[in-house]
Length: 288
Image (cartoon, rainbow, N blue to C red):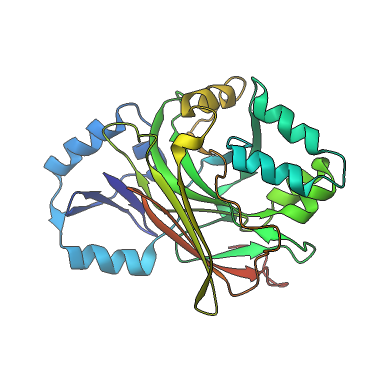
């Protein structure tokens, strides 16, 4: 089942049927047995038409986040380790990424609050002071306040590789800025956890021409989702749950950097496709 957060209300999709819910987002998703609860709602609610659902999704879709924090895991895939080592070679910090990939403790860092998160069809930003910016496609977990993984969404962990490569201590500046995170288009709540064969695909278009495309699967991840969630919740409480990006597995070549006007599409079946346009942050814009 899929939950789409709207400007007013929530759309629940169950197969080819759609239901309009008026539950508060934070209360609805922050429960144990979320799938079973949604299944009950489909028997209690009157379905709306596909056309009605399509209109609402086209005109009022928001990212699937409210009072949840967004965190991220780093260097969970071998390709990510290699990329981090390449970008930090001149700073002498390459060994840091090799060590964290092999370490028992994962790298976890704060990424965003809801007001900085872009949704499907919205704009993500690249930094003006960065010479090397990339999108990072990541399967993103929704974990409730009890530490239970209840659902998944598509995440884009926008990053400045030039800033992080200059000095590993600059990681917050490389990762945390306005609209440096995107989530969507929905929160997938499956009956069973996603399998390791789940594919992740990223495409980047420039002036309508595809300049990058690649695909892999989550089975290439070194760590398990449960392991990452347990480390995150060891000493942190999340009253409304938390989103956790699980690391990037697709990295454009070192001579590639995002330009204003690029379009990034990230597809994770069966969640869906997250599409974002890339721009620089307008100088007079202070909030979404």
